[in-house]
Length: 125
Image 1: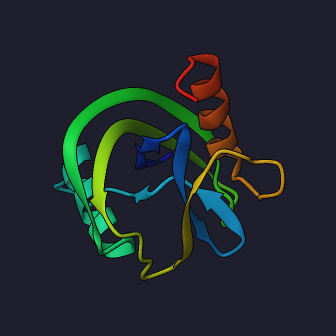
Image 2: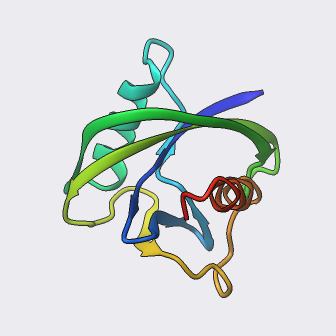
């Protein structure tokens, strides 16, 4: 099973999501072989959202298993709360990035929907 590390950034009761193709997901990605989780988050943020910087306060949230939106395989996503600063500008395969609190009219990945539901259940959103 593949593994990915994702950042949960919440501001004003909104969560930062990025759009890859037509699907909205949390920022993050797959770690390189020698990276720890935090190094992976920092690298992925700098590649996908180059004007943002992770400023720390990382706190492990939960691990989720679900289906990837584009390949359809199973992945484990380990999530961390974290704080970021800077301007949201996209790069690489990321088409758009927004602070979102209404998920009715957007296409969430299977695993992102699970994470958001968990955040609501745990009263983070």
